Image (cartoon, rainbow, N blue to C red):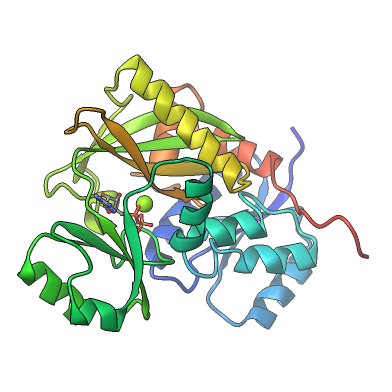
Length: 310
Ligand SMILES: Nc1ncnc2c1ncn2[C@@H]1O[C@H](COP(=O)(O)OP(=O)(O)O)[C@@H](O)[C@H]1O
Ligand SMILES: [Mg+2]
């Protein structure tokens, strides 16, 4: 195996900074164990400083361990394309579209992938009226890690959400999908496996995602063979619909309270977590791929899309 000089981009400016630092720490350890030379970079300064750092470091490849705004939405991917440094995970367009829940929804709908009934409204609209009957979900267009996601069961939840909203003027509102939470890991276009998440308050919030023991992970998800095939197929379809690359995770709700149980795609994550409680490492691990092998696979598939220019 060829040893490489890898920079790990981590931290960043988003509300998922702490998550990214945790992902980055695990990735650095893996890269060192694999014998690569590693330069960790906490991305929190100015862009010119970052670019100067990347130029002087003389890198072979970037491991992008950023999550959320700036790191998962095509912004850093565009910088790395311009610098011609191969980087892990999806490219500019897939990252930008996947991170935007309104744009990605339009593509999922065009491909016949079921998504919850939704509406895009402004904060003033939300203040003026309930956008749909209880229970419904209010979420930002471009965040992650459940930041800003609220489930509105009653007037108290509604008032609390209005008081605490800091995520911009555009809001995605969805019908609450009862039932189960199923997350599928996809690697290089192939759905590897599904895990079911069980949480006490019924919603996979920030605490449940990152506090060990707070959410139960049922691995593999206890689905019938037909249901499992269906969700794996939908995951691969959504990955290809957005033209994703490398590792992704598709988040579904599975409404099995109705006569024809249905999977509803919530989103595709192009920078899935690599933390100790994260689902992609756990899922690929269940099927025999170690964390270190996953990290190696990610850097083996790192690339730039733009081929022309000097
Ligand atoms: N329409 C919905 N019905 C039921 N639960 C939902 C719905 N939308 C979101 N949730 C809950 O909120 C979590 C986070 O929502 P998601 O859309 O995946 O946003 P994020 O990008 O922050 O992960 C989900 O994993 C799920 O537990
Ligand atoms: Mg999610």
